[in-house]
Image 1 (cartoon, rainbow, N blue to C red):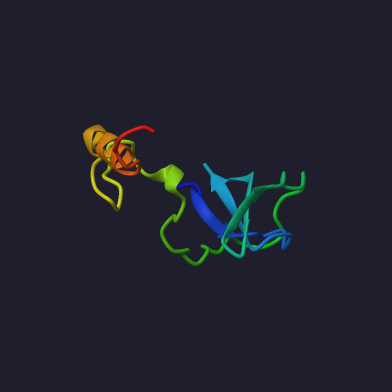
Image 2 (image 1 turned 45 degrees about the vertical axis):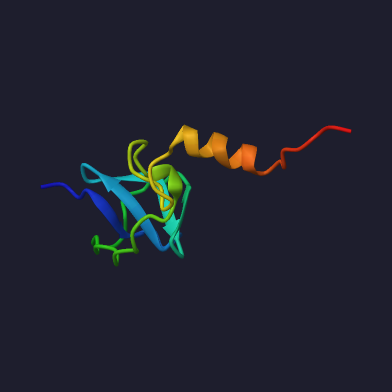
Length: 93
């Protein structure tokens, strides 16, 4: 089986590097923050060591479109009612 996933960067340039099918990719991670940096063209000098897991993704862009928000499922009628309630109704002078 070829390495697949996060491993300590064997080139010692970054904290972790993503490996796909046993090959180093340009996806790297430092302090939990991901970025891109192409790997060197040389074979990696040290054996691969699996990276420590990082907590679950905190980015909202990974949430499915049909997952409810913390406020609940979107309800357009509630939004309209809330907007109308923001303006007091009364006689126009």
